[in-house]
Length: 258
Ligand code: PGA
Image (cartoon, rainbow, N blue to C red):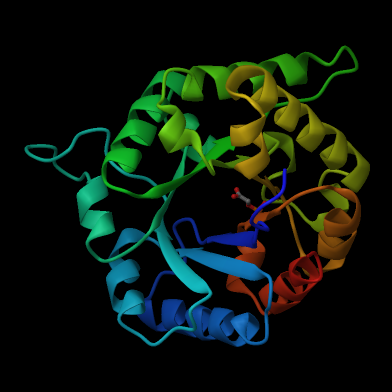
């Protein structure tokens, strides 16, 4: 496909960290520092809900965006403890992580994730859909599992919404560890190609060509460059390392991809 070049995307998933706004502000200062001088890379910071607004109010370079880690399946009303897509949109924030494995563990099914995707599109939020297997096996059953997640979450959504869909491939067994236990760059490459193939088969080459595929799961400063070089990814979804000074190095490694 000709046309516009895709920018790299790095999503910082802070999960339920840190415990104080002061520390959140410090982490964000680190992100701002790391964002300096990047040419080809956008950053999406996804803090816990209470920190998004005060961080949005600070000055950020224009390659930093904000996102939520989840939204409600409901639009508004009597749903104690929930946060709606519109609330996130009006902060303003632009992105939302959906279907993260830690939320799926709390009971989110593909059906729920799909309904949340619709909710996100309805509010003009840009979703980052997470998929990934629990374990790998030699027979390749994990590939069928990933394909099924993609199909069940995306089939039936409008083509217009699917243009530019972001998919974060996060093998559950590789999340929250050190780089030594992350997935190998060649295995990442293979799985990313598989996901692209599924997107082409199911939705056509326009949607597949415009979509970004990220890798997540124990990305650290030590393995980021190798994965960028070999893994065929458009960026990363970074958990624990996004709250540390390593994050700048990860950003630099990604920015080398053009
Ligand atoms: P991790 O988390 O980088 O700490 O492995 C990634 C994620 O779960 O999004």
